[in-house]
Length: 451
Image (tube, rainbow, N blue to C red):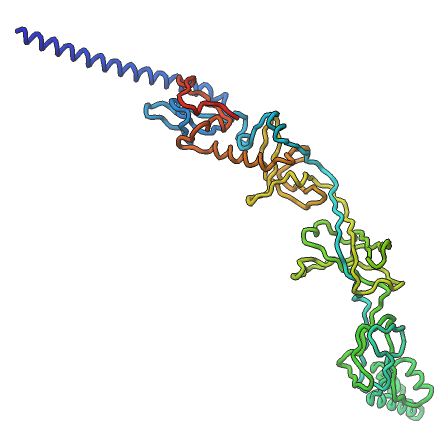
C-alpha cells in the first residue's frame, strides 16, 4: 500500500514537472512572438517615414554582422531588420564621405566646372611646295624632230611666250603647203571655205599665231616651227634633248609659276577638332629669322597619311620676291578660333578602362564618382560633353585616391548574403532602422563605428 502511494506521488511529481517545463517553453515562445509583433509594428509604423530611403541590406536582429540581400527570418522566426542608407539617396552611398580634417590632410583641392572659351595654338611644321594650280605642261600636237633646243636644264627661268624649241615636222610642213595652195586657188575658184579649213587645220596643229602671220606675209612654208611657253615660271621637267624625236603622246616641258606657293602642314588627329578652314596661320622660316608670313588655312585634306599618321593642311602664300622656295621647311603657328564650351581642368578627370570619371564634391564632405563624356582638350582644360553641369565642383588633385576608396566602400556595402566581417555595416555609412530588443547589445565587434 505504501509502495502504491509512493509511486502515485512520484508520477504526480513527474507530471507537474512536465507541465511546468511545457508552460515555461510556451511562455518563452509567447514572449518571442510578442517581441516579433512589437518589432513588426515598429517597422510598419516606420515605413512611411522611411519611404524613399535606400535599403542597403537586411541584418540579423541577434547578430548585426550577419546580412542578407532580401527580407527573411532567422532560425527563431524573427524578421531580419532593414538597414537604410544614412543619406537620402542611393547615389550618395555609391560615393565617399570624409570630414574637413581628413580633406585638409589629404590636400583635396576643388575646381569649378564652368563655361569658358576653348582654343588652342597649334605649333607644327610645314613644307613649301609648288602651287599645283600654276603648273603647265607643253605637249606638241604634231610629231617631228628637235632642231634647236633653247631650254636645256631644269630650273631655268622662262617668260611667257618664250621660244622653248624649234621643231621640224613633216606633218606641219605639209599643212602649210596645203594652206598656200588653197589661198592661191581662192582667186580663181572663189572657194573661201577651203582656205578657211586649211587655216583652221594649222591652228589645230598648234602653229603659233606669229608663225601663221609670217606664212601669210611671205607665202613660204616654215621648215622649223617654234614651241612657245604658255606661262612664266621655271622649268620643273625637261623630257627632250637636242635632236630628239617628239610626238603628241608625250609632254616636252613642265613649267611652274612661283609667284604663289603652297605650304603643306602636318596636323595630328587629336588636333583636328581645333582646325577650321580660314584659321589664321603665321609662318616662320629658319632661313629668314624675324620675318613672318601671315596667311589662312585654305584646305584640309580628307585623307590621313598612313606613314606619319597625320593629315595635311594647305596654306597659300604670295611669293612675288621668290624667297620661298619649294622644299623649304617652315615653322607654322595655327591660331584657332575660340569656342565657348563647358570645361573642367584636365587634372580633374580620371581615365580608366571602364570610362572617364570625375569626383563630384557635394555637401557635408560627400564625394561622388561621376562618369563623364569628354571633348577636345587644350591648355590644361577639357570640354565636358556629358556628366557635369556649370557650377559643379570637382576634385582636381586627389581624385584617384578618393575614387579608389569610393569603389572599395561600394563593394563592402554590397557584400550581402553572409557574414561580411568586421565593421561592414558601419563602413557602409548605414544604420539599422530597428534592431529589436537586442539593438543596444554589442554582441560582436562589428558594432564598432568608424569612418
